[in-house]
Amino acid sequence: VEQTFVMVKPDGVKRGLIGPIITRFEQKGFTLAAISLRSIDRALAERHYGELKEKPFFGELVSYLTSGPVCAMIWQGEHAVENARSIIGKTNPVEATPGTIRGDFAMDIAGNIVHGSDSPSSAEREIGLFFGSGAGA
Ligand code: ATP
Image (cartoon, rainbow, N blue to C red; front, side, top):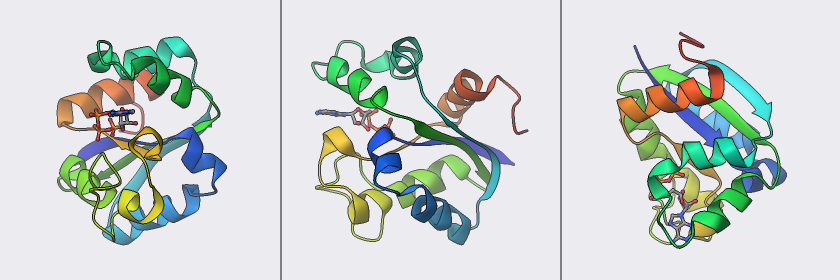
């Protein structure tokens, strides 16, 4: 069964959205394999978003992710990566359809409240970063 990595970002945690986000994954049919409320340091944030290092917003992104605890989760099920991206919605909340998590709960790309892996290989890498490889399997 496929697994994906999902993270409620600090603004989502502060706004009390862990519960509603978990509910949506459960309602969709996912099974929760692991969950951890934790703070992340700059080094982990920079590794997680390593592909975006050259982007002008990278500093802002790392500050955002380290501004408070995050809720890291492993969800599993059929086509877990694609199904998670579909219920999370487009990266920019302005374009995210109502009914998706970002479409319903977020206003701005710099505070889009949740992350979901964009491919099975990213999922494996991110699960390894946050949980140690093999966690939740
Ligand atoms: P995520 O990896 O968080 O699920 P994504 O894969 O949908 O998001 P990416 O293009 O990988 O989108 O961007 C990663 C994150 O960087 C976004 O979720 C957002 O928090 C931040 N980001 C992207 N573009 C911008 C921007 N123009 N300004 C500020 N932050 C941005």
